[in-house]
Image 1 (tube, one colour):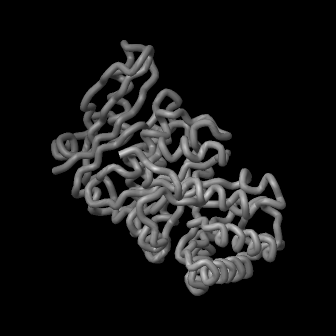
Image 2: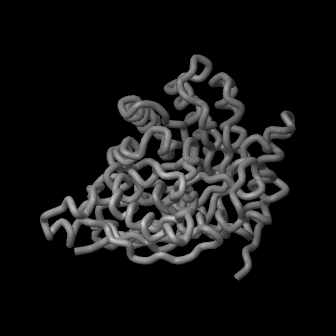
Image 3: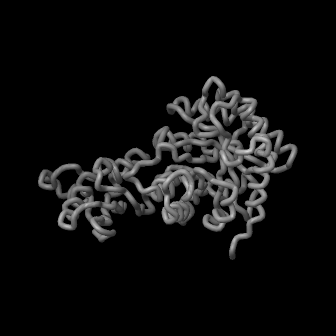
Length: 367
C-alpha cells in the first residue's frame, strides 16, 4: 500500500497548528470526524495522516500529510481533488510540494515529447531555444502570417499565437492556421531551418478537439494551450487523443494564490502532459522571485520517475537586453520567449528578431 505526501504551508499560531494539520488530513481523505468511522480498514488504509510539522518562519508551518494512493483516480480531476480539494478553500493553507510514489506516477504518462523530443523536431542541440509571440491581438490573418514568416526567416525556433487570439472575426482559426503554417513552410524552404508554429487552442472540449484536428490536418506539430483555462481534464484528454503535438502550456488563469507556482508550473502541468511550460520571469511584468523561478525550472527538468523533462519557457516582459543574463540563469535546456519587445521598432522587426536568435546561438554556457 503506497501513500502520496502533500506538503502545505499553514499560517497560524503555534498552539493551533496540530489541529489545523489534522483538519487538512481529514478534509483531504474522509471529510468527516474519525469517531464517525466504524470500519477499521478505512481508519488504517484511507484516512490521511499528518506525517510532519515543521516551522517555516514567523507564524508559518510546513505540514506534510500522507494521502492514500488508492484514493487517487487515474485522472487529473480526482488527483487534484485528493491533494488540494477542500483544503484550497482555507485562506491559511497553501499547497507547496508533492511526493508521488512510482505506482501513481505510472498512471500519468506526462510529456509525450519533452525537452529531447522538441530538440529532435527542431534539429537543435547544444543551445537554448527561442520563441516569439505574434502580437497584438486584433491583427488580420495576412498580417499575422507575414509576422510569422518574418520570425521564421530570422531563425526563431517556435512562433506562437498570442494567447488572446481565438477565432475572432478578424482572425478565424482555420484561416489563420492555414496561412501561418504556409508562411512557416515558405520560410523553412528559404532558410533550410525548421521552425514550429503553435496556434492557440482555446474553447470547450468539443471545440478543442475540432481545432486540434484542423491544426493536425494542416501539418502543425505544436500547439499553445492554457490548461488552467480550458481545465485540467480537457487538457489531459487532448494530450491523450493528439499525442503528436508538442504542448506549450500557457499560464493564463494559473495565478491560484493557494498553489505554489513552483509546484503548479514546474511539476503538476508536467505530470498532466505539458512538453514545455510558459511562466512569468523575475524582473518582468509580474511578481515572481528569482528563487521561485529557479525552483520552477528545476522542477520542470528534474528526474521524476519515468516522466520526460519539461522545457521551461520564461516570459512576461522579456527584453533583448536580458538575453545573456537569462541564459546564464536558466541554462541550455530552456526556451526564451520574447513578444512585444521584438515589435517596438516596427521597421526593424526582422533585424531585432535576428539579433535575438543570434545572441541565443552565440551564447557560451559555463562548463
